[in-house]
Length: 187
Image (cartoon, rainbow, N blue to C red; front, side, top):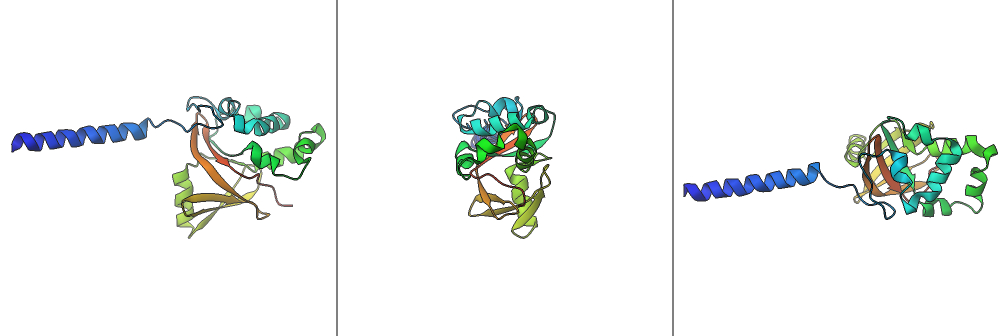
């Protein structure tokens, strides 16, 4: 009887250690066909994502590379190439022109939160807020976070809602949440 009990406890302990180990060492999700490393910063990871080439080009054109390579912490809501392509025709080309740099900076910084907000943090804020939470961005935009049916959305001040498609991509200086729409400053 004692040997059986010891075996059960030993098996339970091994399962607990294995479960904790998988949580503690869970790998980042793949983004745009590329592995994302927790030891790299936001920029060093983003340049490897085939789904974020437009975002990377925009960050370079806006002169925000060094900022997003900084210590942070930052939460970046990262629109995909498809999200940028869904903007009206010519919008991205116009924004990438040097004379539109200020407008581009404003749009991009409306996708950055000056904190490391994991999905669990956002969910808690939404729950504490009775179903939604207003989040301030580096660009001065106010985004409304909501959680419904296991999906998290961020809505800009114009009513455009972006859904988080990949959450908790851990970076050395924060976290990225991939989103399916471009969020815009108040018009």
